[in-house]
Length: 97
Image 1 (tube, helix red, strand yellow):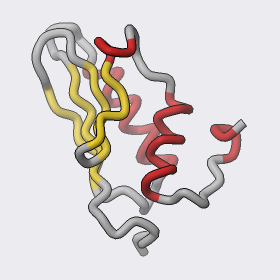
Image 2: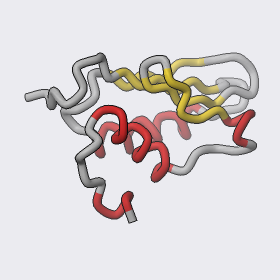
Image 3: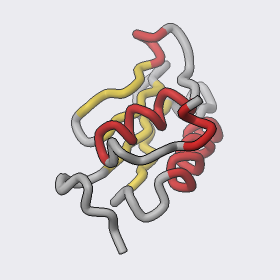
């Protein structure tokens, strides 16, 4: 059964540059999010993007942009940001420490 803490759709999109060979990184992040938020996300999509792009979006919120941040995201802050939107009372265990 889907958790209804957040009534808006819960769609994560990971946009990556195929020319930079970042598909594996995007897939790994998608796997981490699907395992952590099992039954709480409606969709996790991996989408090819233009050159040099690696972004993680939750609905219309850009959680991470590699160009702006100067590097790739760590899973802990991404998980915390998603949790804060879809299930603010949820404990993420080691990801909260």
